[in-house]
Image (tube, rainbow, N blue to C red; front, side, top):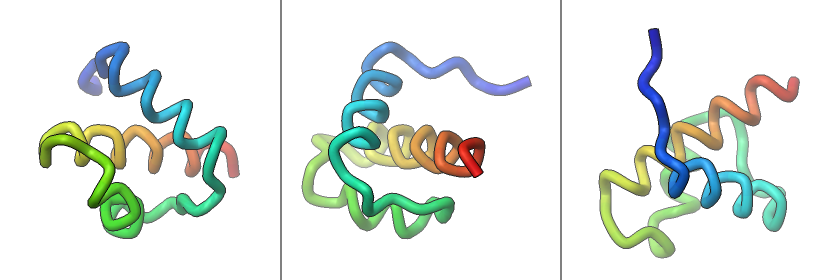
Length: 59
């Protein structure tokens, strides 16, 4: 069973995916893209993980 993501993580991830096309299926590269935009390390990692899962499922 996976962990449930909050509305903040889902909303932010969807907005970033729709605006920018520079995300990939690799967590580390997504984390580096978000480095300067997220307020905290925990939120950045959660959003990067959510984006990674969405990109992988689209393939």
